[in-house]
Image (cartoon, rainbow, N blue to C red; front, side, top):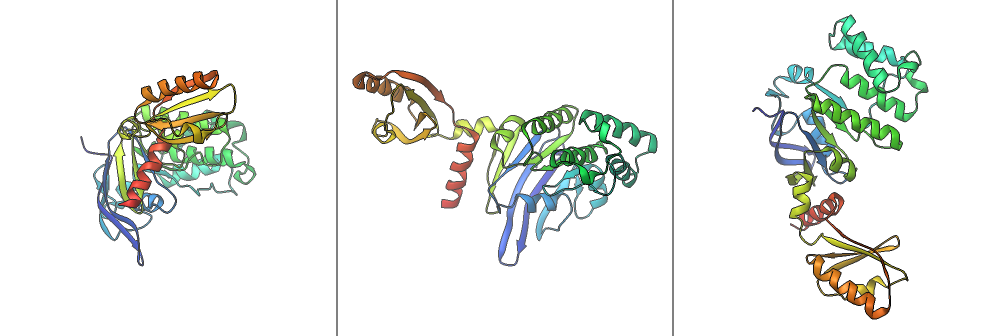
Length: 310
């Protein structure tokens, strides 16, 4: 099957700085693909190239087979973009914003009206459809921008930090909507700083750092491959020195997390037995005791550090 997005040897320089450094990856049709990286890693530059905003200095990018340079119009007709700094037209009402997008994309009047009505109801904005976007909160504007992006029924949807700065309820609604449209066949390219969001939503993720791809895999596979990031989390009925617990055999690192202590290890079973012995010898009661797989955030930080050391 032809990929939804195919990137080959993509490169972009700004003077002496290489923002995107000969990267290669594919996004399969129908998946939610996460694109993660620290600030200035090359995420936004890559999205701007893929969506035709800027031109690369080398390499190619195709959207469902359309070359973004040579067939830009056809590529743009099948995608929608929600940039991180997006804004609706604030001097238009919510309804007028949607009608304008519909006209620009050549959507017949009846169809665009039906789609706009459905989307505004879905996002809880229908009662405010005749109010100027100027008076909308950040969360309402973000919902409206997503409505505008979805009005065209895109095959590929680019989202750059779609829930950044939103309240919990609005962020959850947007995540649920992303899942729904993905189930209906939309391919989603998601750039986010939110590790838990990537973990919840993405089929696969790519981690980019200093313009290079550090890893591509499913969140679960990345976690399982990251040896040394398993941990045992424990809390006692009395305060215990994290430094003292770091002397336990097979413990690589110790962190205090609230009222709990997390011990990173490749041998969780051995460390658990040592903690039980430690508690007995000190007359302590164990309150909580859990083994934890590495979080996506743990994996992300480890991969970034390894990539910077190479």
